[in-house]
Image (cartoon, rainbow, N blue to C red; front, side, top):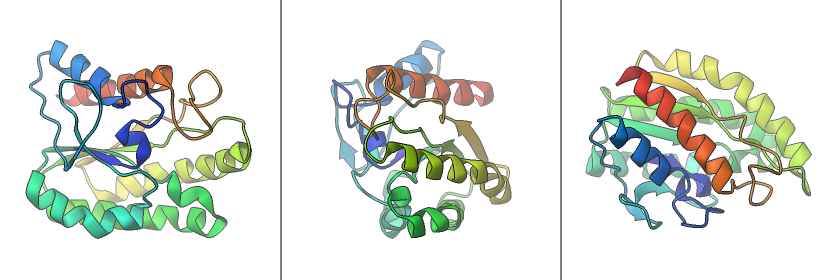
Amino acid sequence: MPLGDSITMGAGSRRGDGYRTDLFRALTRSGLRVDFVGSRHDGAGPDPDHEGHSGWTMSRLSDHLDGWLSRSRPDVILLHAGTNDLRTPTGAARAPQRLARLLLQISRGRPHAEVYVAKIIGNADREDGPLRQQRADAYNAQVPGVVAAAGPHFHVVDLSGVRGGGDMADKLHPNDTGYARMAAGWSTALLAQF
């Protein structure tokens, strides 16, 4: 289950599927059987299912998460969330606690699922991008501790190197190059375990 906000949905990519098609192809080429799950369907790739919701914070994801987990029953969850929590200083300060609550909710709903939690991507140096980058850096510094406390089924994937002009379609969303780098990061983490 790809889970998160508009970045998970694929905003900014030409095909509308973000990292998902590149990841699907990398995993299937390696011999894994892959079936993305979720209530949303976007993009032109071979498996368009996901739970990427544009503009949603972690609290809003949490409001719907129990139903998604119950219906889709994912064995693996790829979580890239927090970008929208960082819009304000208050949201940024509370983001690590919101992540901890989201991971606890996942562990209760799918206790045997393997959960890959991203250090979120960065920002382009446009508009308030530098300020948001400072918030992203502070949040990402706390992600490993939050993930470690969640238990052995939770893993950190560092996607924070996706940032700047060459990787970004706008100040928040990757372009196809950035999404390809995200797919490579997810793929490396997954293939190391499976």
